[in-house]
Image 1 (tube, rainbow, N blue to C red):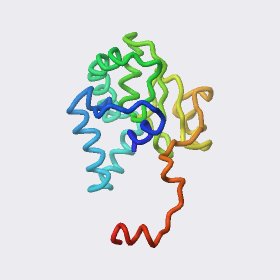
Image 2: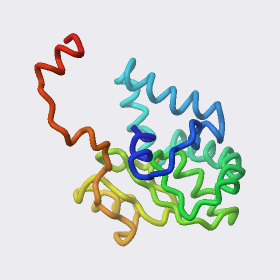
Image 3: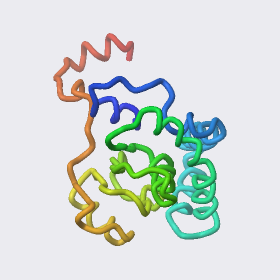
Length: 178
């Protein structure tokens, strides 16, 4: 979902490797692969971890510290591409870029396009310049997490244009053999 959003926002083709893979294969396996595994195979455990990382507790700070340590590995890619701005559609990438900005390693505007329909603490980082959120209801919830109102833009989540086209339900069911 995260790379689909980014692909639909830019005419430039995305590279096969995105931020988490560049920063750390361990992060890609644990966070990205782990996220998919837990969400699809063990949703109750996923729910517990999701709630636990939405509070300031040792697990939250462990994830924050991990992002801080590996954020430096994004720096070569950022310097190579020399972007005018960074649009992040993933919470760990948002945090890593924010850490680089905090340490003065980069001075590039960072926009966080949240692909969730509700805010979660892992999306919030100190050096984000703007948050694009799914709806107006998220604004007050983001403010409660410490984000200034003038940084929050309830523009919605960009989706692929294919979702706006009509299709014949029976034909699709037949085609998908359902």
